[in-house]
Length: 482
Image (cartoon, rainbow, N blue to C red; front, side):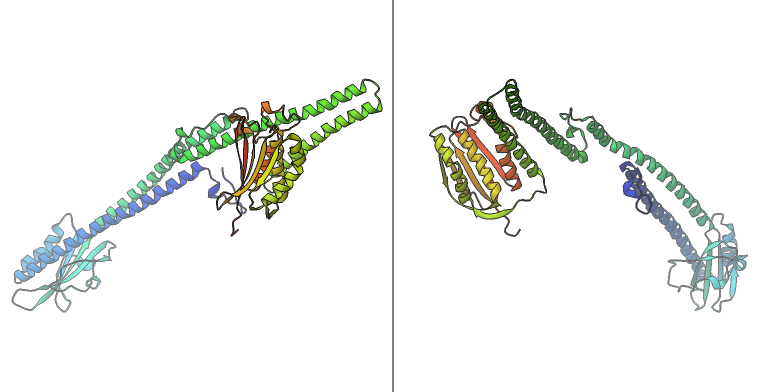
């Protein structure tokens, strides 16, 4: 899919992954082919030039030897200059001899119409060999390589001659031109083939992602148990598939909890509403006395209070889950706050025959009201499920340099191991304890967990049937630099 930016131009990042991979692959292959083509062309051109320079160097050496050994035999010189140059069918070149004053002594027929002596570079010395030549366009338009060298005339005298050689390299230029065309054709075809291969490779490579998308489309609210199974996918997609499966696990767990929460909420609301409706129907069935109406209203008031507490707790949990909710942290003595809550429950504890004890002390950085609410819920639960003669102990201590623990331990009925993982869920109540607290809603521990989450802490629970329960609130120490 192509998207346009604010100026109406299509951006590369808006392309499909297949399109981007194809373009990148094609551009990469094109650049590689260009580099390879340039290198091959340079190698061929350099090899041809090297061969031509070697030919010129060899020809200069031959002419020097002739002038050195047979300076008085003009026929040999004439044969080499006039006949040898024209007899060679594969290499076309011209030779010219000049005296010290630059006057032409002898030259290949027609050379004066092709290459003027002034076109040649300065001659190299007698002891030098030809290393390079000069490129030049002749008067007839053909390309030539030119060299000029000094040659000794005879072994006894001091006379010298200037040797000029012009080598026609039109065939080399023609070879290079053909090679350039072939390289361009190869570059064009290679780019087209690489584009096609890039499309095929990209589609092949993207097939697992398409399969993951199809698998994801099959997952609905009623099929959250399905998984992507990362073992099937390439290494690069294993992390994505694993993350997706982990997300599905969390979604499935959250969906199950939400479904359970909805069912529990409906059940918890139905009970007081049914009680209210039943009492109202009974009351309206006949005329009642004032005392009867008063008794019924008092009973209804209890159900209304229960509904109000439930709604307040649910609202608190909803606010606690909001990531924008802020808590007001202050430094306070943990044991002083625990004592304040304990005093509130002393009368109820005495009535139940349960002893509440506090020990230890630490300075805690937390929201004072929320801390009191969490401790209150834990003490309330401990009193409900601890029999006469039992004990509830609250301990405040620093576990190490990073955490503070508030430990609430009771000697109550305890909880079976299979219930511990769900004990902090909303409305979750252990069946065999409902008789001890029939009017409970199962929101107390859920609120405690939400309070600890708001403090970036944690809550742990250990319990054994018949021996009691221990709940540990773990508060992280504030960062001194933060």
